[in-house]
Image (cartoon, rainbow over all chains, first blue to last red; front, side, top):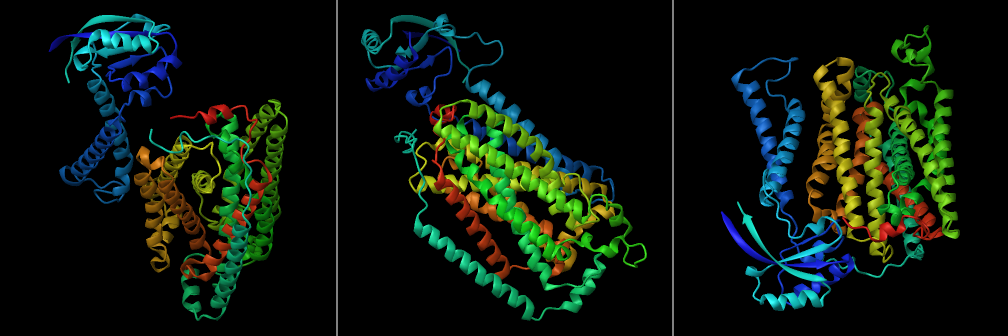
Length: 180
Length: 432
């Protein structure tokens, strides 16, 4: 699916100004799509009101899937399909299951987490990146506002952004491929 | 974040005052502990126990000596002495690791583990006394007849270990461990206190050097002291994992003590510098090293289980089936409360950031690792005559209260926050 979306792109020169404005801009009723910065800024997630990622829950579920797979695989193979006596132990010795179960738990959790992360963030391989302003990789702090998700008019938002410290506000049309 | 601690004003000039009421209660606790201790001894002397039956079993399990009630007394004293020595040494180790790693987050709480080290002289002196008075009751290898080829009780295996397990060398090592740890601790503490007065960053640099020396020494001595104080009880048996196993147990207990102290001080209105992020890191430490302990415990178990060599499996057979199953329940409880419980409770981020969860897990882990040491020491010394009575509870009460007294007194003697620590700013703004 492809859609064209119109965004307002506010450019900030200073991270302190940006950090302080984010809350004020949100309080004046503007929904911010995303903020792009050249380096991580402490407290920005909090100011943007991001909810905690649910990735750990996915990790836990992938993890127990891995444990279940490992235990099922070993006990079915060694216990029922082709029972063998190894070192005089029972066919399904619980201590022996632990290392493999542990490894598969970690493997499933790690791979599953990476896959989940890439899918939910639209970061699959070959994806064309959306760059609102290439200067966000250099020395500017970029704030993108999705006009279709805001009730306020474009010039109202522009003046709000300018009031709270944006040095310039541009419009950008983005072709977005979205899977989720 | 909606936490109330996050934006509270931070005071760097904090001094802990040891409330007289708490001090009085601790002395009362020591008094009650002493009464229980005496009651426990009297119970052991006068209570009828199946001495004859126990002696037969004991002889069958390898030792020829008859059960003496003193054995349970000395082993309990030794157990708590080793346990609290470990917690005190881990306090120094924790500070040293933070210095060597150039860690910033912990600089606001470093005075707390730093205070633990002051307990070392007490346990050091007591350990030498215990060894002289109760050595024969704890350590089978201290008996002279084992090395006498003319004696029928001559033991070839133990005699072969004489180069390492002989009383003079053993005592020399014991003195060396305590001296090395304590001297380096005093030097570290001196630098830390001088840093408060002068803003000189040289004290920080010197601390890093001292910490590096301490870690190198501790890397070796934590293992060898574990062989000496714990492993040599089961003289015939050996395990290459044992040094790490004891270290892991000590480390988790030490981390739990640090966390608990931070939480209690925070609840008493101190440590405004500590916010949920610091608690989160302490929680992660406990969570991670509980898993580390399990890893070491299991690595030791699995190899012995898999190889199935009688001289090695005896250690676990004693604990699982031996002595009429005295230790079977504790064996599984040990794994449950030291692995499954912290693993499941501290798994989520929220649990690590809230004091109530940290408090519960710390207390459970402190009990759990005490139990771990109990399982290491009791089967080899008292066998089926082990138990939990007034003796055990009394000794734990005395040791725990004395430890809190020493730590709280040490804390009250210096500012609670090392205000000239060059990394302090990082600790104030710590966010994860």
